[in-house]
Image (tube, rainbow, N blue to C red; front, side, top):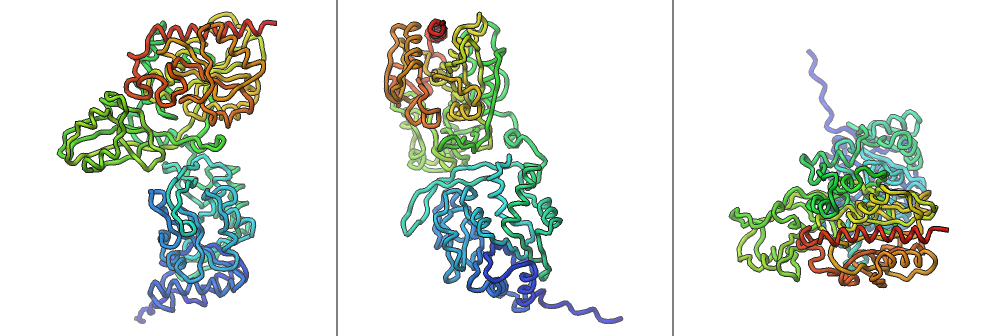
Length: 639
């Protein structure tokens, strides 16, 4: 029996790799972007060490590209997304040993991108890296520049499984399973430590959204746009960036899930259901058919109706039951002016306990315990560390409604009295929260009158569990318009907009041009459950027919109305930036101090803002006031 053939001690050599790269189309002077999987090739003849493997691949590329060519290598690091500082000189690459060795080579430049940095060697690198926008995959990003210069994606050892380039196409084509997310943090720029905000088109955390490039590979191969050559135990592959752009774009326009595992799903619902049941605030609120405004408010105020939360839908259904309505929605990450529709934040549980297990505060007994947008955590810390994370209010018995500025921080809210009673020792904090892909909705209820001109009332369904802040205005406006629709048509056309997020009205004006062009004034309605005197607040002066008509009709309904100019907690000049220029915008409220942005009324945005602080008679009077306002507009609309 013949002896078995001796297996080679190596799988490829530098000459073979160079030949393979030439075979797939790499040429002198090219700009080449490469993902390299050293271990997938096997061992080179030049040696079985990582250093030898690296040098063989590097030298093969540089020998072909020559002095006029440029080699680009991903040196991605995701630590910035976790709140760590990014330093292009020292932050390591986390996408393989080839990339980390390459970025440390003399003469190699590194792009100043804190998440998806790229290292480059060659004459084109400096221009490609210069002045990149603070958006990883947006307009004029590196990958768009690679298309413009006709660069080539030439992978070694990983086939078509790795192609970060496609995320740029996914963002440009607005695939339904990715969305722009803000990542603020610190980085080193020109030797200085600076704080910047970057946008990264993240993947929604559902299994269907995992990258899957098999259809792309098949289509590119069929169209002769994708080349491959065997190397060792794997292969070298090449596709030009313009071709990759074309293949991806055509595929996504046929099927938005072309580059993902699929199948297509409602991503917002899928990600929410993946968090388990029950969903906080989702359901139906039972109301008696003859429920008055205060009964409606009392039933809705316990809901955890944070922006985009399922509880906003529950609130909306209760307010609009039986009304002719139309709901539009837009996903997390939608650009509205200079802002983004935020992620949906849900909090299932939160607690503060002594380290030995004694629970001091819980979400069930104190609904405002976890600050809005807090990151999930389960940590122990001493009293000093805990105090740094506590948010209190000047009113000693009040628990404030507080919010974190980004998805990385967390804090707890309690009364000043509770904070003072805490004793030295160790404490455990648990917050079971999540930042999810969601949809911001805007529901419109139109009461057509005898005019084409429309006066819009704008209210919020994301009342955050506070009774008077936004919810009293939403209840008053919905009840007033319900009464209006139950009667004979009026002379003035009226529109009620109910938004589940702060950017709702501005987005609606863009999404509904055929109706929004009829709107002559917008009145946001807030804080209608306490003070005596109605207030019509505007951040900027407005002149003309419609400002005069609104003021006259409002004064007809409420002769004691105060008109105030300036910014409030509910309406400031910045809120007008994304609305049509010159559109009169007001806030109707009953706040004693309407221009006090911190405390327009006692207990503003605290646990004291509860249904028992809202006077049933005052809320009913607010409904009647709006009815009289409508009548005043009707009178002005008569020829």
